[in-house]
Length: 349
Ligand SMILES: [Zn+2]
Image (cartoon, protein in one colour):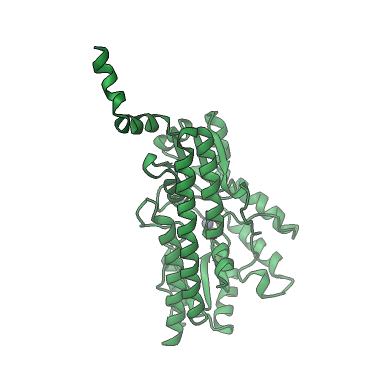
């Protein structure tokens, strides 16, 4: 009897994985890119649970019971920022879980950028009237949009009202929450994720840190590759659908000339569309990028017959990519692809 019980212990290579798996924390994340980074850090030890499913916009989201369950049972929750998901803090509070909460935009080494203003951004023009103009209209249109997420309207409008008030004061304090699109932020987050998991699961601390370091090194290579491609491409003049990409634009020095929507969460006003149309004709804009989450009919009707390339799709979340460690690097590669295709389009025009 004793002998039988002891036998497995004499085969430690069989026992170690079982013990390790039992100790691995239950991890829940918000969006697919964060899933990808956490999956990299967890490696063979496990995978996180995802709240916001691929294809859904994080700004307004109605959680399914299974997703609320994943949140309430988590040992640790990694999410980008309450500015990205203004409905999430209330949900977290109501669940009263004992989970460790890690808001990635607030972790050490994260570069934060302020939201840009106006359809064509502050940096590109100095018209004093732009702010008042845009925000009056955006305010009017707050109630029209986001028809897919009716039950979120309360949280949603609440978040946007406060943003509008800041904008009306012309003090632009809001931090743009799309920070994962800077791979240097992602490198910092890999380290933060590894440290949080190492604290919860000291036995596997070395594995988490090693996996994070490997992910950071791979991102170094990717940054160099994308940089070389974007530097070699001719200059691309493009407008994005929603202002989600400035972290990528900054890192690789490929600035957008404007955004049609102020955020995922607001539809463009007629005045904003006119401003974009003027810019397209005045400044030789080559491309207006689509996003899979948004109605393409709007772009078609606004830019029909202008010669502007409108068929290139980019997206900040990696819609359609496999949900694993490869999603994050592929997401960045797709953004670079879109910009390079836009630049090539201009050569054949
Ligand atoms: Zn967004």
